[in-house]
Length: 159
Image 1: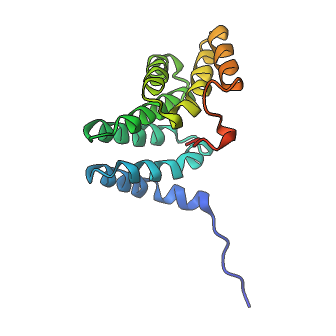
Image 2: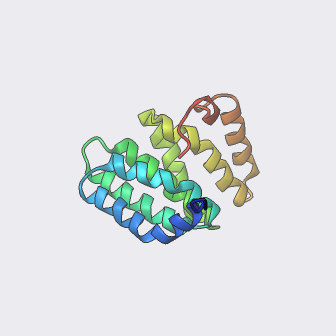
């Protein structure tokens, strides 16, 4: 008796990239920011491991635009903008991301948007590090380690 073939998630995500982008776009067109955000979040690890930061940036821009147009979508828009900036950092474009990252931290603090605050110090610190701004990088590391933002280890959403 032969065994069924083993699942290969990397091959599946690679083959379905375009379809997954389309589904996220359709969720946005339908005004389902929550669904689009969830679908994009499911793809984060694949995009990171396969260096598909271009796909991540595209998805999160779509979600941010959709959230900007929806009632009560400010928290989703802030989070999406953070993910766009993170994608820029991962693509080596920290200078492009710096302004967006600063805006995200400020907006998330004003809105008390915990999902963004859980990630923002890390990404702003990574951005600062890439730009040789060690003082800002150290402040962000200290802020996160002293509990200035909800810890990813304490159950905060990380993607």
